[in-house]
Amino acid sequence: MDTPRQPPPDPRPNEPFWQLRVLGRHGAVVGGAVLVSPGLLVTCAHVVSDVLGTDPASPDHPGTEEPVVLLSFDGRPWTAFVSPELWSSGPGSRDLALLQFPKGRGQPDTGFPTLGRVRDLERGQPLTTVGYPMDLRSLSAQLSYEGMSGPTDHSHQVLTPHPHAAQISPGFSGCAVRGASGEVVGIVQHTLDDGRRDSGISFFLPVEEMVGARDGVGEPVTLERLAVEALCGRQTYESLHDTLESVSVDQAPPEHLLSPLELRRARQRHGALTNAWDVFVPLLDHVSPRGEPPLHLAWVHHVFWELRGSRRIVPPVVWRWIGEEADGLGLGSTWEEALKEQRDQRTGRTGERLADRNGAPGADAPKRAPQPETMVLFELEQVSDGYQLSHSVAYHVGSGYDLRPQDTRLVREEQICDQIGALIRDVSMNRLVPANGRPLRLRVLLPKNLLHLDLGQATLPHDSAAIRPHLGALHEIVYHIRDRVLDPDFMTWMPGQWQDRSQRQARQGTIGPHNLLRTWEQEVSELANVLTNDDYTVCVVDSDDPDAGHVYEAVILQGIPTILRGPRAEVAALVKEILEQAPDARVRVAALADHLRKRSWSHPEGRSVALVQDDFGDELLQSVLTRPHP
Image (tube, rainbow, N blue to C red):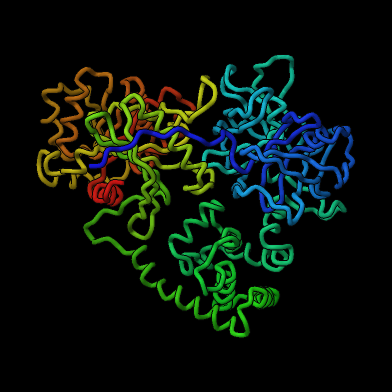
């Protein structure tokens, strides 16, 4: 086995690559600006007024001739100018400005963020921002979403969760407010100034409120539209948007044309794909294989024929756009034949792909719960100097998984939680998971001697020593016992018992008195005998019990697939809440991970409750254990 390498130092800046610092008249940083699309940045109008020395209370546009200087994360200066579009300044305004880089002069090569929406946020949901307070290059601040509120009808409120955490200051104005998976939901605008440094109340402008006038003359336009037009052009937007947005993914399933890899990349760049326009936008910068028509053109051509096949009237402008785009790309007079051939080749794989996706299990096999499309899996293996920590990103494709190993490093036991918190930050920042605001499913494959691991209390990296966001509140966490998955026959008292209990649990679905056992209600010496009752599939363990190790051993050997463990007061309260529900309203075993995550918002002590969920024959775990290590 190769010796795993130590974690390398993190050379990256704290701020996202696509966020730039805005410099004032004397070279000091006065706020931030977010690069949302080629050549376009969004910031606050009062930040621009500070730079140009104009009156922030005036609604007048400052003009398009005065330069605004910005610094990218690597310290390079860039010059932008104030666009006439989206400008909104003065009391009660949106406090919004759009900046443009001059065409032909280049821009930071950073990529662009995914734009999210506050309608997808829940009250109390953790958010984050990175700003530039006085004398600091950058500072990350953790926020809690509170809903619509603030100095204007367009503002939404956030709270700093702890009075001693990093506070929002003027240097945060114009900086991105981000969700758990990195999507930008707005920009910071104001902090409540009541004479106390620790008020913790701030306000931001959501993406959907970033609305202004087209060319400054009155036609309404949104930031989202301008960002897409910067990629595809105004004519393309006007020709296609309304039609493609009206076509749901049920009417034109993207998996009929796109490969699993292409579809996954589209979700990573755009988030949720609900209609044909959502699919089109992330394909605009897709690089197709040599000689193959661009994928965004192939998609529109495919949607056109899908609609024609359903006898839906398609506006003539769509076919006209296809022809003009093909001609502009130099596909020649045979472009229609080339696109048809490409579609036939791609959709020819549809039958095989759908059969693999929808293949029905045998009559006796239990129906498995649907898995999240993307999961992050951590594997811990004990070695002589500590633990080898590997992590991978797993994408659900058809009936299996596309597993992408990321890194392997050597850690001590006390480093495990911090390292996993840092790796989750990296996964989101590097856009390896869809930026759709939904929680990730974290699956942790660990040796049974680490069943005490308290990953729910792990936090994301932060500049401050104050309260940080906990993984237990941000993401779903599921533990798996490596010893059992590696050698089921050795780790099960009777062959087939683990499989039988897993199948019984899948058929029953919910938790009830008939299948749940509170292990502390039994003598440890009698526990194995009690567990011979095949109905038990869920065991609740008091992790503070001095005999907890023996309890785990008995539960695992008897093939119990689901374990809830934690301090007795917390797990007892959880079980009481579940069993007090009507039988048809009780939480399903498959939904336990998400239930624990949501519950931790109102019961912070509940983050010490962990879910061990081992289903016999789990395809993802099998693929991990059979792959070669890096």
